[in-house]
Image (cartoon, rainbow, N blue to C red; front, side):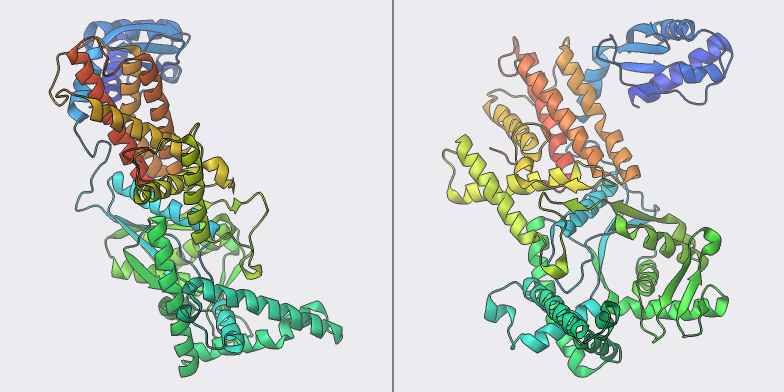
Length: 592
């Protein structure tokens, strides 16, 4: 039982005993640093059931706790806040229960609990992954790991957008201009090769638009009548009809892209439990559109297109099938959601990691699934996140102005290497060891910089700013972890034994209190789907440790019991840093 749970019971007993009143809950907060105390009871909410002066109520409850609760050694009241002093022995007893627990803070699922499926990445097979995909992958992967640590069974998945007009654009451009080149013949990763042809299509499309405008067409008409676009639309119809030549080309080019994606995912350190493909699920979506037409969920317009009327819900009409019978994104997403629950019947909720430009799309999707009668639709969540901007401006895939994910990962390692070399702390490292370290620091910097920000906020990403060995950065936290490992390696005594109780230094107590917050931090991050909560908790823990390190001698303590306790405390902090960073997908180096 935590100190909050224990005190909550005693405070309720105090109110019942003194005022003959019943409290439903007790509100706590951390004691402000300028006051004596370890935990604070907020008295004001009690005034709903206890009439009187909040200072006098606080004094009465404080006196009761001091008399009745062994772990309470003092109190003071400031206005309506009861600051409680907790005995050193409580913290040491608690610490002894967790100090060797390698999974401290984690909860584990019950067999009967429903699972959660987290979707992320979900790229198009017409271009390589870029900086925007990196935020998506890091968020989705981290949220999945946090949900696991909170006690949920989790499946990581993605829907690969492998069909549609945008895919046909790359295919057509390669067919027209590719001259048979392949990843093997060019030495390019397959996703990059296909992405080049997506850019090539846009270039040719713009040329044709200008030519048609020169012939007297309006810009709108020119965009619709450009021959290359009409040919791409025809290719999509042939694909849906199962044309052998088109389908063979589609399979070949998609495989090039999948091979390229796997390299990027591996370098980025993310993985998946299952894959879904739009080319499979859109047909199931069509089936349920047909079913919904019969039951009145959808209606057909005069041109044959199928729609869902959501005006009663404050939205508008949404198309789910084009007039020519081809599917739209909504069709595919309906089919994918249904297929996932069929494949994994123990899944009780889905988390979609998708940028905030799709907020409306997911409101509509969730409403349609509810209208189709799926009970699980009320457990769907859109993890909406802000875009990633660069100092140079917004990225555009079709114009080839994106920051390539592979290039960014490489550049982060190079920058980490340059800074590490300048600091001159790598004597005795082989080149291979240096390369591994640079990659660990570079990726840690990238991931932390992105994940420490609330998902809903836009990010202005500055690679150099992220690799800083001071401040709220990944490398600063990694360096603290490595420093602790150095301390542990230097300990020339058995620090694994239990020690008698000691008087705690205020910095030891502060550090123990910060450690205690880790389990509830994981639960809060899981409820809010926010890796930023874990990132910023870890930074606060590291700040507390560094303050402890600067004020309290660890290996030079006055007696062996103090040395043992402080090494154990340092080790528990490093375990928690490692566990917290693993939830962010970040590795920690043993030496830096």
